[in-house]
Image (cartoon, rainbow, N blue to C red; front, side, top):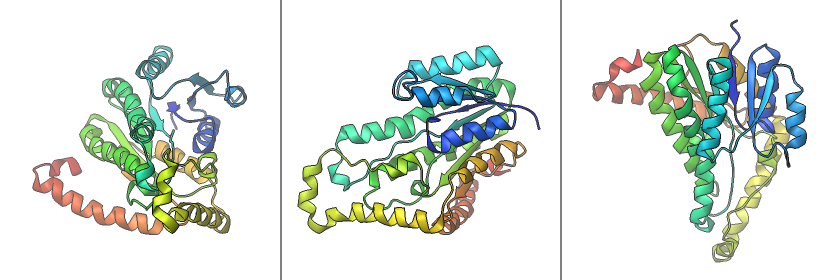
Length: 287
């Protein structure tokens, strides 16, 4: 197995933290991004920096220059970036009407625009070397929009849309774009419930406004019952890296709770999607 240069975002906790360790132990060179490495994430940055084959970079995902500088630093030092894992994510819940424009913008800036910032920066180098892998971590909510996770789902739909179209655009250039769809796991993000800003809106919804808390409690119980392990997501990332170029699936579901019906949706849509591409004169992209 050839050793690769792997850039992973959102490595201060959860899937990113586990992926950075798991990929590095295989001998790949990992560049792990997180923000505020001298502040609230200082301990995490120090611990991760002590891992062999890992270099921590302080990157603000919502800042074009910060992302551009990080990618330039890696390419200048290593000559290439072989794998980009867009893992960083942000979740917020509540009745949709309670989201301000600022709330929606913040969600999309992290979940959609930040991945795109990295994609734009790594694609030229990947095209030049005619090889590369981009893994975008979305969610089962990137395929179905549950009530009270409406805006979060919309942002993950957005990342899925960017990923799916791009997958076919760059595949013939030697670049694979893969979507990873995790379900509910006991990560720091899932254990911190953040609600939209306009809490006063909840009052107008009566008993309906109590449902988001019930939903989060139900998710917590399902996680306990199924004993979901976030390492499964890190392992799925490794499997995609190890899979031969051109043979990586567009979508990979990692979800022991609701994964079966998300996978069913994916398979059904793939058939119709293929028909659509053919209908619009792009059937050759399916090869």
